[in-house]
Structure formats: C-alpha cells, structure tokens
Amino acid sequence: MVYVDKTAQVYNLAEEGKYFFLSRPRRFGKSLLLSTLQAYFEGKKHLFEGLAIECLETEWNTYPVLHLDLNAKPFTKLQDLYDLLNAQLYIYEQQYESVAIDTSIEGRFRALIRAAKLKTGRNVVVLVDEYDKPMLQAIGNEALQTDFRNALKAFYGVLKSADGDLQFAMLTGVTKFSKVSVFSDLNNLKDISMSLHYHDICGITEKELHATFDAEVEKLAQANEQTKEEAYLELQRRYDGYHFCGNSMGLYNPFSLLWTLSEQHYGSYWFSTGTPTYLVELMKEVNLNPADLTGYEAGASELDCIQVKVDNPIAVLYQSGYLTIKEYNPEFNVYVLDYPNEEVKEGFHYLTKYVER
Image (cartoon, rainbow, N blue to C red; front, side, top):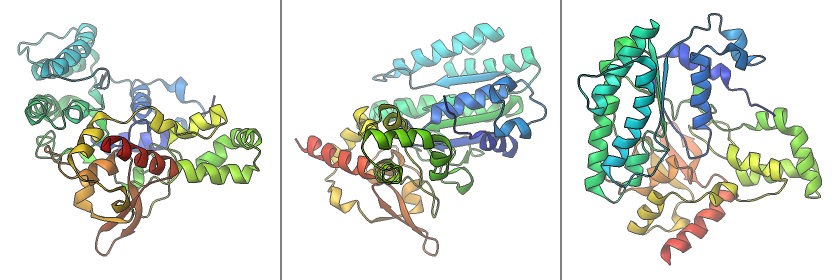
C-alpha cells in the first residue's frame, strides 16, 4: 500500500480558519480528504505515524465529528433529501443523546451540534461530502431545484447560527452554486477551490508521482514494452494537466492514474465510470461545439460559480473537470481553458456525438 501525503495541508486548514469550501471534479479525492480530516479531528494519532502532520501537531485533541454524505442515493424528489438527512442525523442523535424541540431537519441539526458539544465538552466538527448532488441532479427541473435549494439553504445556514459551538466545518462538491442561493447565509465560508495554497490538496503532482510510484511506473513500462521515460510521458499525456488556479503546476487525475498503474494498461478509467446526468442534460439544451472549447477565454467570475438556472455550460464543464486552466493573464484576470488531457478530450468528443444522437 502507498499513501500520497497531504497531511501538512490538512494541518494548515485546521490552523488557518474555521469554514471552508472545496470544489473538485468527481473521483478526485474529496471523500478521502474529508475522511482524513475526520481521523485527524478525532485524534487518531496512530493513523498518521510517519506523515508530515505527526511532526506538526502536538496536542491531538479529540473533537466530536458530524460527517454527512449526500452522495449516498439519487434525488428525484424533495423527500429523498429529507430521508437521507434524517437517516444520517438519527445515527448521531443516538450517539449524542440529542432531542430537538424543533423537529425540522435544520432544527434537529442545530440541536445535534449543541448536544454533541454538551456531551463531549468540545466544539464540533462538521464535514459535508457532495453538498451539491441534489441540485445537480435537478438541473433542468427548476421547481425541484428550488425545493432543494431552499431546504439546503436552511440546513447549511445552521452552521452560522451554531458558530459558537463549532471548531471546524468543510463542505465539498463538484460545483459551486452562486452565493445568492445555497450559501447566502454563510458569508464567512472560505472558498479554497482556486487557491494556490491548496490547489494540489486533491490530485497527484508530477513530483509525487515520481517519488511515490516509480516502481509501479517501471512495471507499467515493462508491461507495455516501453522505457520508463516513455511510460512517464504517456501518463502525462493521458492523465495530467488539471489546473485549479492560474499559473499552478499540473495535477494528475488520481482515479485514472491509480487504475492504470494497478491494471498496467492505459485506459479511459475516469470516463468509463459514467458521465453525470446533469452534464448530459445541460449539453442537450445548448448548441455546444467541442472545437469552440479549445482556447476558450473566461473571466474569473465565469469560472467561480454557476447560477441556479444553469444556462452557461463553461463553468459547469470547468468545475466538473472537462475543461481546465491552461493559461492565465493576471493583468486582465482572464483564463484560457482547454481539455486537461487526452483521456478527457477523447471522451468528451465521444460524449457530444452520443448526445447529438
């Protein structure tokens, strides 16, 4: 087993602030990041032996952690969201003996945070994985998306009213909806999606690939009758090239990279897991020519978030990982976009032909 050590950045997050948001494409390591944060805040020092954070952290305090995952089921109606949140809240309510007078989902969430603090004597950590999945699945259905937005706005708004009882909170997702929708009450949420300090908190850098997987690349080269140098170049061409801020180093898609090294075969592993329904539906609505996407120039505001009524595919394609930053002009704050690598380019062209049919 191997582990690419990102724990120094985990420590920096915990030291730097309180509320964070991170947008990354699917299968890019967001869930692993949150589980690492959970283990850290639960004080499980033994899991971090030999990693950077072992030398950085001196106290290893234990905090109650509420880890909510919205990726656990499809959402076709509002009740699906309530059922999922109800099931996950119930488990923690039993653990912390929480009884809410206000039995709404947001009322129970607020009471649970308070009960966890009272029972443990420590502030609470809240981690939310795939915060945006209900709204993404409702793209094209404005009424349902409005229902999801109102419910999630009230639910996530609890984090502001519970500020005095919270130690840390982080929400992750594929997309970032505009602040006037889900996060309008969370004006203290720090978005690190395009931060240079955290651009590689998910994904694998060229340096990490060479330092951690050199033996596996050697085996890959042998299996494909290549030199090791040729194998590194092939990996770079197929799976590297993701940039989440201007003038940053490229990142490898960890999912495709790890599957390639495991199977010793170059394949389209990320695309083979399926294209999100929301992207297919969006592409059906717009007249999108793949040739127009290469070299597309976008302002920072165009990439920063998407509106509740999604009518511009560029921000969605960027945040979903189908486009990435290739160049950045700081004078005019303009980003030049393109496909990150051959895997995405080939898959996207196939997808557009499928949608046209």
